[in-house]
Image (tube, rainbow, N blue to C red; front, side, top):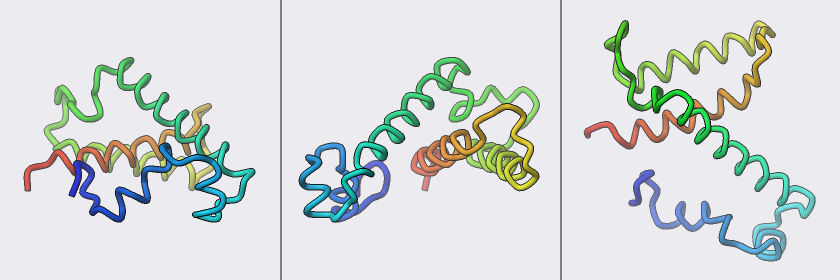
Length: 117
């Protein structure tokens, strides 16, 4: 198992960044017009997470706990609930709610790997 709790076959499947477009298209039957879109979106999500982390001082994974004593994963779940609520109600408040939601889900995956077993 690696840091993200993936067994060997999952690790291989997730190494898409290392695969050539030809390997993705011919070996994995990914539609050619989607390969670049997938890479751009995932790279953009990573850039967004890094930028928000820098701007907020890593508050999602290492909160200062001024008002809330809830653990990190619980705090992330509350943020995810808020984003889902905005999606359901159609109230995005000028935000990219889907990108934020995906970002919080990634952070939750990271936080779950950091929790003591």
